[in-house]
Length: 133
Image (cartoon, rainbow, N blue to C red):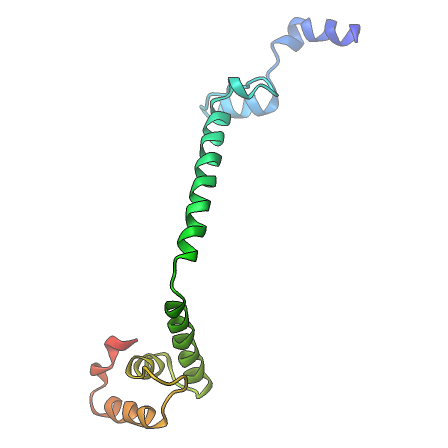
């Protein structure tokens, strides 16, 4: 529009800074507006492109790493979590559950005898069990 061009070239409008630029400059920051739709002129766009590419490579490597975990290791993790769940279902504290799970290796449920044994140890010397939690 002809009128908009005249106003844009007028000294009052031409020298007027945007509200954003005024606030940034008032706080002592520099402000550089780059042309829109010209990513070749904007270093942050190049930086972003570099990291997107890097992320794609890392993501593929991450999936390969996840797939490399042996199934028996995953099964051990599942069994350990099941033991903790069983201990909490039976009302054990965090320390008691950790002690029983560390003691147990073969079964998926917590042995009642070990729960009683833990209580006896705790009554005798509570400091002995502190490192297990």
